[in-house]
Amino acid sequence: MELSVTPTLTGSLVTLEPISLNHVAELRLAAGESDLWRSWYTAVPHPDAMAEEVERRLGLQSVGHMLPWAIRLVSTRQVVGMTSFMNPSDTGLRLEIGSTWLATSVQGTGANREAKLMQLTYAFDVLHCIAVEFRTHWHNRQSRKAIAALGAKEDGVLRNHSIGPDGALRDTVVFSIIASEWPAVRVGLQHTLDAGRGHQAGPTARQSQSEGVEPVAKG
Image 1 (tube, helix red, strand yellow):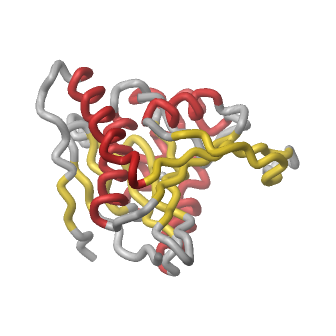
Image 2 (image 1 turned 90 degrees about the vertical axis):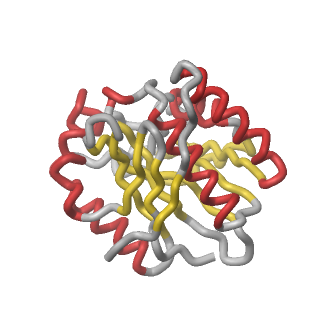
Image 3 (image 1 turned 90 degrees about the horizontal axis):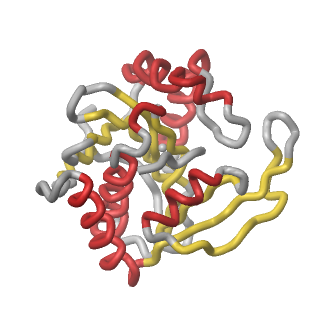
């Protein structure tokens, strides 16, 4: 699988739009909330390095290795984070949802859950993936809890999987949702979102082609 064109995905809480350098200023503000970037077990970019991070993601997209999004609130039109499809498999229809972070002010609001629902819908129903993977740092308990709450199953732990910028060894926890599980996962996610909105209509997850996402936050 090769990733090339990032679609726009629109729900009732958030819109996922193809990332560009035009998002940098708002992303800096989002990352600066509560000094989110300081957490040692996450990979939230420093506000001063945001342009470099956006360029890195666009570079990976140019070679088919990533579809990067900016996350925008529907209610305020404010950009509040980033997410992506990444690490597509060479031999099968499998990819990872990762490099995700959200401003602290929108964690626990349902924004992350709706974003994941739209991404999973696109991965399974449009790209026809057989599996979607999530990875997170062993010490990121918030992320592990949020991924499990999506309906993903823990596949295992890759011990001493990588070395961080500070030289610390990282154990990576791997989760996945497979195609046969997707219908039940979708119902569960939609039910939770509807309950959180007082049983209002769920996200439409409209998809359109673009003209011209490590913590996974709660909710």
